[in-house]
Length: 234
Image (cartoon, rainbow, N blue to C red; front, top):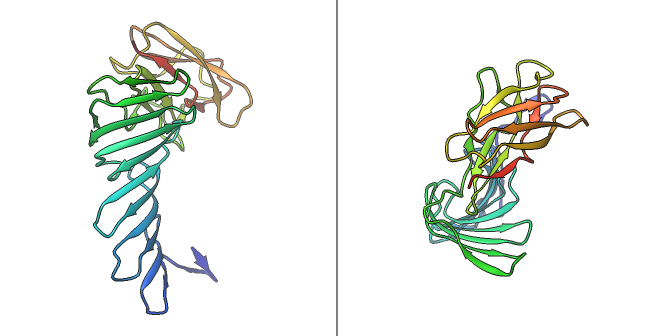
């Protein structure tokens, strides 16, 4: 923040007793603190992966986190932080509900309620459905303002998200911009329409089942957005 040419790194609001109740900065977060003797607080921040998160800490020191992952259709509630969750309850934009127990990024058997069918489904034991992993990009390509990532889902689907910046604009047709790892590739070649940052013109990517190569076609520039790409890996 800057006031009259002076940079302010931290703002602290106090109550009538001099207790800090709202702290802004110096890190990119806002802390709302309970008045003593309470030790409860609410923290609004971007976590280590750049995901927006709200953390609630009660007087017993227990942490609960609400977050919405970029490119995801889920709002997730964690017991713990995103990085060290004990369990997760996720609500999908389609009305699906998922419960998982977790330790770090390892997910134990979970239960899914599918609104479209009205049925409960037990997910694949041991499947990693939490968190995002960086897509292995071809040399010369890099993530844009939103990291290029992928996420396996409990039903065998794989979601991609984020922006990619290519070294040449427009990207020549057939250029391999990234390669999906083994186990996270479509069961057959997939063609998916995508948008490009700063352009109203759509292009497409083709993901090869055998190699995992993501090929770009009909690009209007060098800024493909992967948010609309998803496929079945089984």
